[in-house]
Image (cartoon, rainbow, N blue to C red; front, side):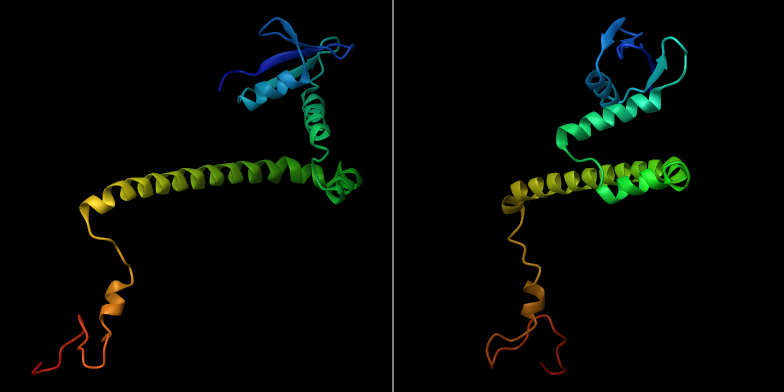
Amino acid sequence: MAESVVIKKYNNRRLYDTEKNAYVTLAALAGMIKEGRQIEVVDAQTKEDVTAFTLTQIILEEAKKKNFLLPVPLLHLMIQFGETVLSEFFEKYLQQVVKNYLAYKSSVDTQFSKWLDLGAQLSQQGPQVSPPFNPFMSVFDMFPKTAGEKPKGGKKKDGE
């Protein structure tokens, strides 16, 4: 992954992309992040890192569009215990949980796609290559269909 893009934040709330030498919006920053880029936001005057604040603004803007981000009880807990219990949880565990979820989801999506491809290949080749497949046929062949018929495929008694 490339180096992070440095964004300067000015007092008038304007954001300046030092890579493109142009002013950008929060939506543009969100787009960069969705493309996999890392951003670093620095206050232009004080040189203070304000990345977390800016990323929070982006999340809030996204939530405003959908009118929902997190469940209300969780938001209450975040405010109530924000600087103690939850900050440790978010720093240590939540990031790893989300990464694990995304990795698992990706592997399941890949496997499901392979199954769909295999099924499509078999459905195209199946009628041409082999007779129809019935997974229960061998089980039902063992039982006589009529009272006088002998079972197929079972063990034969001596003399039969």
